[in-house]
Length: 163
Image: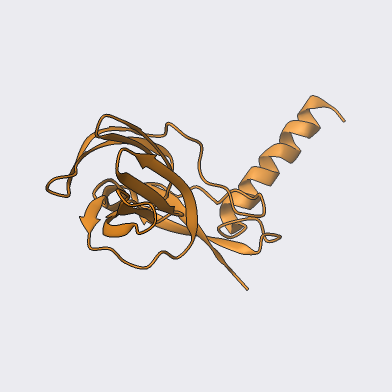
């Protein structure tokens, strides 16, 4: 195959895929992406009342506070001064979050594609987003290993089962 034929074939593929599309994700995937507008995404981090955990993820304990990840949703906050009886304090809503590291009272959270720093004041249960590094991480992939179609000003924050 010559370079000219290869280039023509490649151009035809891109034109066909952009005109007709292949949906939000490869058709072999059992999952559909959950998108959020970038502006909503950046303003979504809030401290809320405690609520049920949908899917438990990683646990981080610092001093007498335990952070339990609710995968792709946020973090449950517990008073862990008595490990035999942790008490829910509240919930930090962080769509797309799966991990946290803590230094002093600063939480370093991956929020889907962004690295966000949050100052958490335990005494008042208040939070302030202090910094955001956009696109510090690659986009989320589906649980079965596929990437979502990129949409302008949209972030994939989770995946739902399409069956």
